[in-house]
Length: 620
Image 1: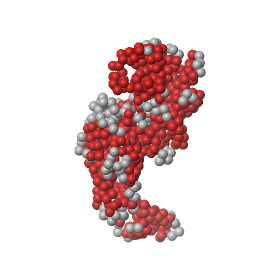
Image 2 (image 1 turned 120 degrees about the horizontal axis):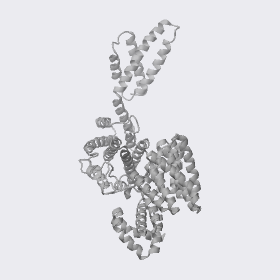
Image 3 (image 1 turned 45 degrees about the vertical axis):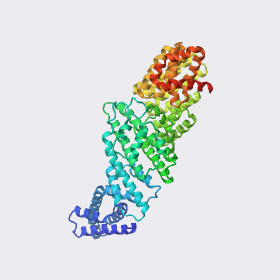
Image 4 (image 1 turned 180 degrees about the vertical axis):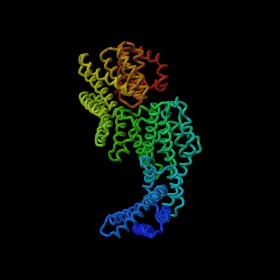
């Protein structure tokens, strides 16, 4: 029925109820409800409300008009009828919300172009929307889609696949749900990295009675295959397969986050787990998007829509994550991940963000991506990202995010040896953080300011007295971060203090702070800062002429930093090259004596790779 016809029909219905009320033929509110339920079509509430609002305002005007007492009295009685209609309409809306949601979804899917249908489905089930379809509604949607009679054969087949995928997805999730967390032997850590010491969910999930595509995917992850490679290799992926896959993988992620956030034994551990889960699944979906876009097996329609839909899921996950209080404004992917196949995945995350307008969530996600790009050595890219994030945060009124990006920009300036700029930026962050009461931002600003002052003094070959101001800032930052329980800021301040005392040749103080920094970095899970501490340990041992420990620490630092993809590995490589020149054959002998300790940390392959890294450093 057309909108015009429905509008007339609802006007007549409202008038009929009013007249029946005036004549005394309405005996109960239930009678009004049954009339509404019988006449109102699903997904047409807006039309009814427009007609009701018009009649209500007209009648109210008459009820306030005292010029004709007879008309006024009739209008007052009509208003009582309208109030009854309003109450029963709200009741009907509440009781038929599910039916309306299904009807709206059906209409949108029926009218959509084939290329847009998958994205519409993801919008309908997007957890960022308060009225998104839940599992029961999705099941009802699938059943209703099956019951439709559609003349267009292609549309009917497409909707049948959608229905099949939903039902299969819900069934596979029911199968996996008992195994959601049963694989976790040590609740302090999730097995999403490449460490063989950790429990891993993928193998257990792949063994369950689920769809073949899901089995193949979990098996690939268990074998450390990149999600992008798996997606690229798919030969006959149907719409129903993708829908089943999406429902299960998204529901697994939400279930794991819910479990982690409700850990009563340790709020800190729960937060760390939640961050790890969010990042893991966002990165997986980003890699899937990249893999599908490169597939030579899928037809052009599926290649495009599966890639686009995977980007959409990535963005949905990141938007939810960015709204959490524990979103890591100062973290990087190394806080939670090991595994070479995750190393470049953050590059993918910038792609879906190009397709959305500036929001608070976008600023926070960009902050995370920018910090990772900085660690990877892409300083120009990181600077551009953090500048954009700072501007968006400023417009959105997210002062914490704005300060975080100022602190990240200061760190980039330090990396680029532009210490004057780093000092200026960190001073601005310090002022803003103190004005707004952002203690975390203040701790990081103090760490950056002291760090920049240390390196500025080193560059200018300043007298030891010049380090007093820098050390003062760092001690303030360390004390504040300890008070806040901010382990990452503690690690950064301690690392910077250790660096300052290495420069001042005060190895006792250097070791004290480097040990403190290494512990804080390990506790926070920040492997990047741990590796930097090892690098400075190597320099401190070198100053003490303890060549064996200097070689051990520098070799570990060089390997771990290089595996993360950061150019910082070149600093310990430089020290090792100096030691090799000084020690000659003795260098290789020492390296062999340290072999067992090195293998424990980096494995046999890692030990063999050390010589290749030193050759690479010398050649460059």
